Image 1 (cartoon, one colour):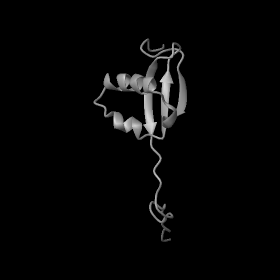
Image 2 (cartoon, rainbow, N blue to C red):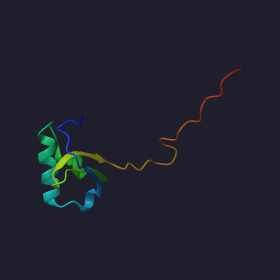
Image 3 (cartoon, rainbow, N blue to C red):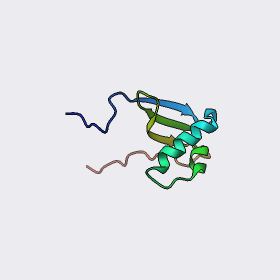
Amino acid sequence: MSDPAIPSAVRVVRGNSGELTVDDHDRIESFINRYSLYDRKTLDAATYVWLCLDSKGRIVGTTAVRRVRLAAGVGVHRRPAKYCS
């Protein structure tokens, strides 16, 4: 049985934040503000924005990702520790 609150046709799209229009920002801000406190600067600082759109193009979910460039040697992954036998 499907949940009637979940749209039957949802598509996920990724956009570059720098290519979003003022209208795009307004739509995203309006959606997020229905569910949480939101600082628009968070979206402005994003590198990518993922939108879940229903069959009518309405936003039903969203998230933003910000790419962070690290200086050399910062954030280097550690190798797994060797276990004693």
